[in-house]
Length: 165
Image (cartoon, rainbow, N blue to C red):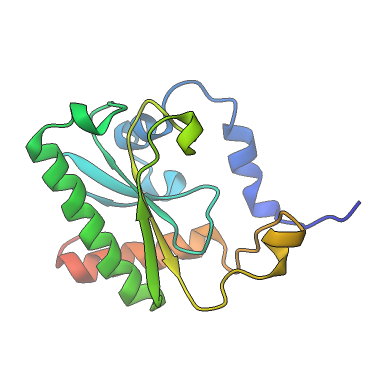
């Protein structure tokens, strides 16, 4: 058996049994660093994905606990998209990606890991960022610790927003 050591991820493993919605916990919490929230708006927020596809993989979620895009108000949708736009700007500033995957998965069969709280994935991409590891080894290699990614992106959000993130 081959092992890939990632001891900093133990906190996420311990959290997997927690009750309730990860997005609602992060919104209500006051420890943005620990929950990897990098930016807050009035009715939406941005946080790092605990299980990223690439470094800087963000999730943009509304404050309100709602599982379907059709249940969001026009104002909520506008703020969600504004936070997505800011995410792209912050990622460009911090990581200089060559492209992005931006998407919403509605329902478990569509790939939603959290079905009952809608969120938008913003995944920065670079030429050659997919190699043999995910294809042959079913393993992703993330080259940067989440704490450092959080610090860089929180700074980038402050810069693109002109205020404290």
